[in-house]
Length: 549
Image (cartoon, rainbow, N blue to C red):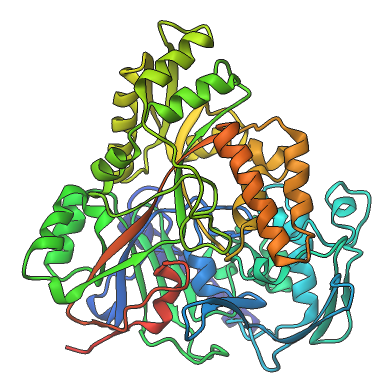
């Protein structure tokens, strides 16, 4: 019997080796096979097909831009949605209910019963505790500001403490979070993608594989990350056991594509269900004004701001006269026109149209080349200066048009602008380390509160360096932090509006450009298109369905 067993094992090993060699030959080179996309034509029947930016990681605690997986594979304690009147409100999600102490510092949460991660593990308060601990201690975390107001967060971050003092597990489904001071936007903050809840056991075992390997990237959300092939795309399958009920489509087929012509042709041939007109450049006009797609066009206003960042740690951008000249040297309406055919609103501050606290009475930033040149002369640059405007290679055609138009405008006031294109990973590395002199980006509201804009960019030295703004005025950043604790809504909004005028109008710390309207075209088979409170579409995939042929 022992000899037969050994013989069987030997034959099994030989067969396994032969199969492995065959698979390796078919795979070609060093391609990852364990996460490759299925090749069978019927493997994605009923999947919603869309274009997606290729992420470097989907670990939502360690990215501030790639949130599609966080929004579809994971959940948060609370959600932000629109009520019947169109106002953003906070709703229960994984937390079924909560109470707030009279001093507004302690929040006691009660999790829903029966919620399970897609691997079958039950959601508990310990998972939430682990989530916030990891958020504060992970060396690559860039979303610590979600939890840095919790009592003991600073000591945990600096390694002085080994547990988060302000987080107390009260039972399997109950826990309390105590803050250093009252923070009026705390619940809203918990709806951010970066506050998604992790399965403690799986994520600890995953180590560096979390956010990179689908097998270890496990959540409670509507979809399961099934495969990820670098350079090609991701497949997400419907979570049939999701606590919210299964999504309305069988899955998501997300394609990593950047070529506008390829994207357009794929859509016209029926290979895409959702087309963002940003992805097709100037041919967007064909979809917007032609007769074919009018009944499948959807336009949404995004609560966001597109801006140009100026790094105050670098000469001559440290001089407010130079920054003001750069503001005045741009015809922002022309930029909106050149990049997006005028679809949007000019913005004059930090809070864009649609966000709570938006100030419609902010003074308009004018276009005035003569005054811009005069300011440059006063600053000692009568012949202008050289400026490096850095661009990510992953930028859309609209973003590229904006940057080229801005560079051309600055040339006319004597600022010689070099457009420097970098791989996205290098662009992000330099931006996070405060080493970019000038760049353009768009920030979309994660939650509907001024704090999501002010604290993110001007809350402290780390935040402002992370955005390569390097804003130096500590007394203003302290006021931004203090504004979080103001209980009276009118006084709080008043303080934010004062800060907005100081930072943008007086200090010219960045150049606000515009907020945008986004237009989508759907395939004939896609039903249930909708956007969320902030104008985002990707976090509403679960509500969309694919009609059978």
